[in-house]
Length: 72
Image 1 (cartoon, one colour):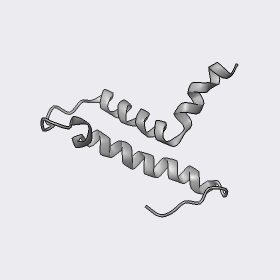
Image 2 (cartoon, rainbow, N blue to C red):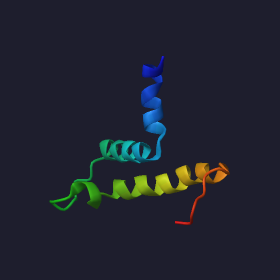
Image 3 (tube, rainbow, N blue to C red):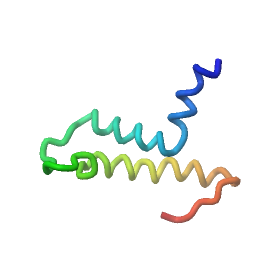
Image 4 (cartoon, helix red, strand yellow):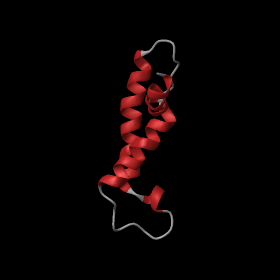
């Protein structure tokens, strides 16, 4: 039973959720106008994923009173 739920716990943790979003946005529409070199950090989709992460994940954190959050 634990083997089945392990990927859910892995994706629900913050770091892996952000990584999943980054990969998801990159797979949706690769940007052909990227400068050669570091494609990962120069993509607009990376910025979208980070903004989504800040909005959605931090709202969930603020609803939980056990977690202390700071303004971004």
